[in-house]
Amino acid sequence: MIFDTIVSRELVDKGWSGDKKYHVYTRDGGEYLLRISPMERLEQRRELFRVQKTAEETGVRMCAAVETGVCEEGVYLLQTWVHGQDAEDVLPDETEERQYALGMDAGKMLQKLHRIPAPADQADWEKRFNAKMDRKITLHRQCPVQYAGAEHFIRYIEENRHLLKNRPQSFQHGDYHTGNMMVEDGKIVIIDFDRFDYGDPWEEFNRIVWCAQLSPAFAGGMVDGYFDGPPPDMFWRLLALYIASNTLSSVAWAVPYGQQQINVMLKQAADVLAWYDDMHKTCPKWYQPIQKIEKN
Image (tube, one colour):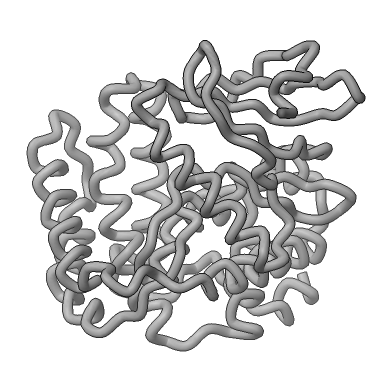
């Protein structure tokens, strides 16, 4: 077992999961990411290991699952160590053209991940997501922190629920944005599959708001890379629905984490409302075809 050959470890203090994460070294000079979870997550970690192995078969560049098992500290998962920099640190120093190219790369890899089918017994998407939106509306209304413009999200949600009908479902990374990407040898590498799920593949783009805030060119490239060109109008209409739903309850989500995180989500809500003209438009202002980026 590779785990038994670990000779040193360094704490990795990043991410939102409750796992303990370490950069570890083995006797033969190998480097890995070690994640340790509580024992009650044994089956979840085994499933994550299986899912990552399946994702690797698509050919995407990613942190690969190497080994999983039980140790004195809990359930462990060993993954390949990615030698690179966080995409969030790299992108601001790149040209717009380079940001767009990296976004294209991320979009093409997401397209590959979405070829993994959802289980045959997966629950109907329309029913699932309508229930999810109902919960998010309730969370918002019960939240002690209210903000201007939230009613525009609710209006768009109520007017567009019908778009969920007969949507296909596939594997989802679950948190696909620049915060879970690294740049190694000039190429995007995907990390942290911890929130994987199955659902409408286009819903996966709901985290693109983080990309757009950091780099509109990257976000645009990601969309174009996924669709091998400009996306269909239906994509924008559905994405606006998914982003409206996600953003509506984001402040309520942030409350337990304190004022700093509340402020982050309030700014994001304001940015989303500006991009979509208070949800009266479906194509966000940050999206620019490559021709416009090349002219800037």
